[in-house]
Length: 313
Image (cartoon, rainbow, N blue to C red; front, side):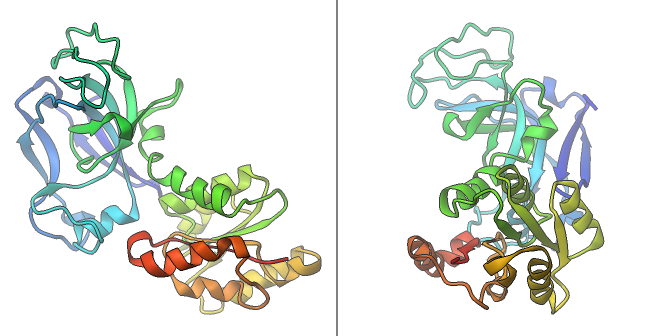
């Protein structure tokens, strides 16, 4: 697959675009450009666009793989809260190889650049040099090349593929911040992850399991529920069933003891639907240290789309 650009979604769907000779060309690149909003990814088209030039404080990266998130789908339909002015290149998460470092020292601490064509790489002051494998997030990931600032890049660990790294930069920190920083999830607790088969949802499933929690994941199809199980969820529930809250409470009643029979300890909802609160409404209350989150959610729901709540024991 060295001659292909892969765009992989969290459910395993892969879009493959032939590289041909595009990476050897310094004039044009291939990209999924949005000139008008579309109904879905099936309407996306690959176009030929000018390759970005080396930038004063951004790295030029040859993309090898890109991730797909729910917000990417909303954005190409014109439904996301952050819409670039048309035309723009779709995609945000990516992994690839540095082919040119910033040309100036601003925001990087260096005044020496690696060569654009990759033939010279004497740069030592920049965090990354030509040839380094990196992953990150910046508007325009559905392309063969992208410009990204140093602050939005991380090195790809040894042994990781480009596909492994491409879908982590946005999703993992989001779920880690929710489950670790805000919820302080503890071993033995039960966590409900709503829309568990999405990028943020699967990240939450994996993080909750790593913390020693029991995970119930909801998803809208049999395939997605199996994906949740494959990534570590202990139980799965079909959220299209109007009685799914009762199903979750029933699982807790069957497998938990004491006050745990009333429901889960932590609810994580990357979609931002109020219906998820039905799960904890029986006996749960917002903890004092979470009231600020509740207020923030009410004020910024349109911008965040995430909801986290703990059940008081």
